Image 1 (spheres, rainbow, N blue to C red):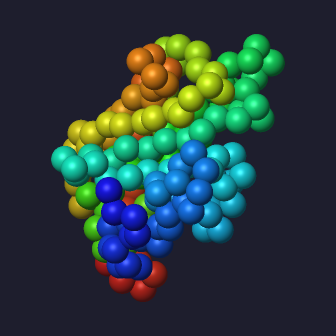
Image 2 (image 1 turned 90 degrees about the vertical axis):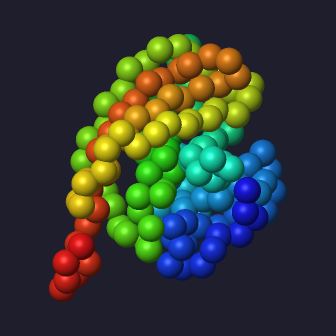
Length: 160
């Protein structure tokens, strides 16, 4: 894992490393760049040796629902973040993207006891779309299965 991103035009964009806490050393795009992800997370990612993207977040009491399990909305927000980590090799050069679809199946309940992880793979890529799928897990339990489509945006005034 790289402690620092490779620069503003790398496949990691303007990622920064968490300096401390449970995600120390993990990278994030959200700190100061995505107010929603910063508020609801924060979420981290790191490239794995095989090139896959691994994402994580440390659940806190405010991520829980009335039953004491991680709220489904928190898991879906995390899955949306994870789509970009999974697709990072398809987004070289800082290609801007947006989520077109996010499908999720809740499989199990999580708690605030340990890190939540997400990993997956790109199913297909076209000139303008990336299709990905993944699993959100905690310890040995699957919490959420998800799939989604990312759309690569055209630069203003030019072609993608």
